[in-house]
Image 1 (cartoon, rainbow, N blue to C red):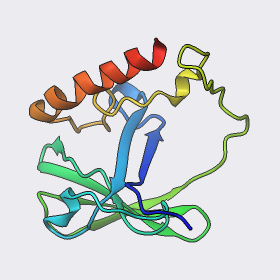
Image 2: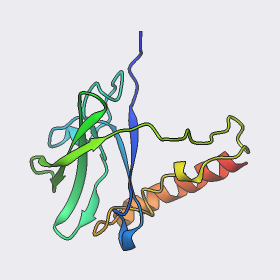
Image 3: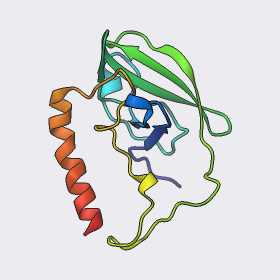
Length: 151
């Protein structure tokens, strides 16, 4: 029996960031309503319900939140909401296993695959930015996590 937990999914979009670099988005299990999309919810798996970026990015037309809804066979429907308005379809995401398994170490100081390091604050999608208040909150936590992981 799986116990409910907060589910997370990291998504890298090759070429989707500024200057053609990668864009990174972090999703978590949340509600999908106008207010509940900003509140974490417990799920038993990544396919048990919607995942959203929860915290908004800022674009030319206001705040943007992204959403993934599970579909069969490791596919997700991708949508977005601007300024807490209704969700609009954007496309689909298909999760695939890597051709070669990433190098992971169980030791904190062990070798690690640099491609596994997601940088959602530093690498948002093109034409979007992390709000200043959110950058101030998240950046130190990510820096500490990377330092602790390397130690």
